[in-house]
Image 1 (cartoon, rainbow, N blue to C red):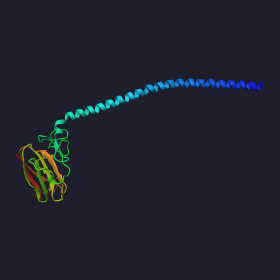
Image 2: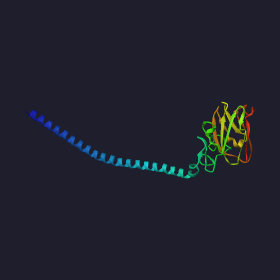
Image 3: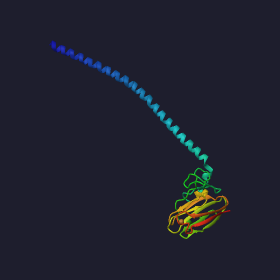
Image 4: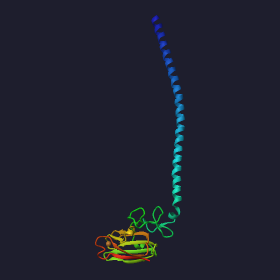
Length: 224
Ligand SMILES: [Cu+2]
């Protein structure tokens, strides 16, 4: 009997001990949860506040710079048109310009950012409308046709070159200060390049493929 009472007492103590431990655990957990809830809660608004703030400033910055870009280059480029796909833009007053809106340079390497650009191959010279600004030349083993043409100083020249014999030809003015006007076509191809005629004078040209000039692929551009 005594042993049973003792063991019962012991059980009671153990239960009480467990209860006390549980209560302590609950208190600790609740207090931790309290701080836990508070700090994440204060963190979440902070992060959500930071994110919109960054996004907003990010959005504002590019759109602002885009606006600045559009306002700094508008009139010249907006009203400019290209003679063919890939050629440099031509302004309303017939000045050939770079994508930056400044006049192209002819004394630079072809492909230079300041050089006039050539078109992709087009469907024959007939695809480009005839006008005072259009110069159409075909080239084959027999030479350039026509082999002489006349333009005015500073005038827009939409230079259209066609290979008629299935071979590659490269039209090139002999004056190196006009190097950027060079235009090459593959066999039976037609391409266009727009530029403004240089100062008055006579400018000889030739086909730059080895052997072609020697067999007669030469000519002259007269600038009045
Ligand atoms: Cu040639």
